Length: 97
Image 1: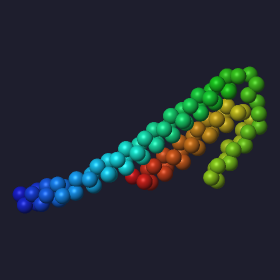
Image 2: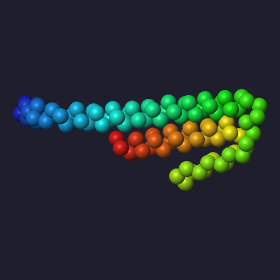
Image 3: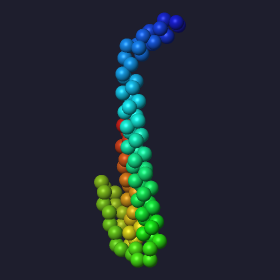
Image 4: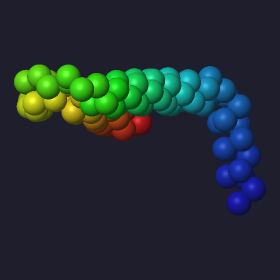
């Protein structure tokens, strides 16, 4: 049993950059997902602001990568756009892990 731990320790010491590269990749994916989340929150905030305005009535149609949002309110379209943004980025990030 001790031989397995010794061989594992030698293997880890021979390739120290491999673990750092994997951590760097995961950190980059996390940073991209966090940025997408912040942008989605900002778009949702813009949507709330547009809904709070009295004159946000506008026909809006958004078609992105096979998904579409059609509404009569520009604020609700911002909500849909933020949801689509985070959905596509998070799905791609989870597939890369």
